[in-house]
Length: 199
Image 1 (tube, rainbow, N blue to C red):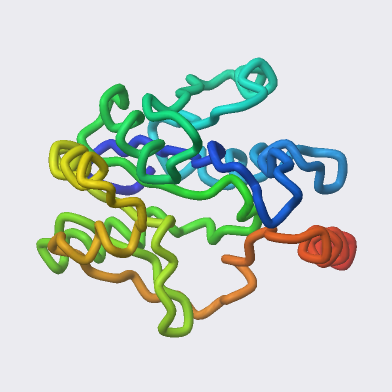
Image 2 (image 1 turned 180 degrees about the horizontal axis):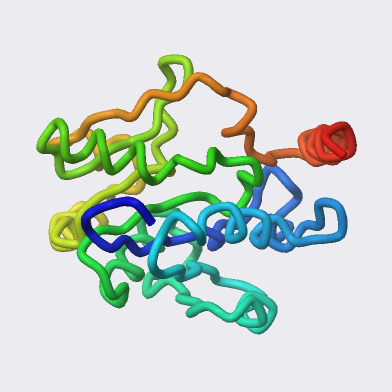
């Protein structure tokens, strides 16, 4: 880690996976290794703690050796519910969130989000690639939990809508492929080809 403050990572693996036939995306295999393991391997050197937000197959996720946190809300309410749950238990004042289906994230992702957060005096820094925000890939303070709880209690579910009410900034990246996520089997096949091509 090369930031002044310690940071906890929250890996978001609690979704229903509707676009993948309701498969648990974090446990889909890429080169024989679960997607969530690719994500953890990429981000763990960048942070001081990792927790996993998951709602199914909890024993499988626990085998990775990290705390696994089911939502407190029922019926897969979305990534914000996972964030809200995790913010209550992470050990550090800053948290970084990332989906479980983004296996090729930049190795300096957290450092650059932190630099943007500090430079702009923001509450939240969101990754943006080629001008497009990646709302689920962000860095913020745990004191945001109270306001997030109010947002969820009022029926809010969209990550971007919650973020728009905060003092937020962006960290700009230009390598779109590093942020590719696996939303369909075709995406998984492309990822397999990418890994094969890099060997």
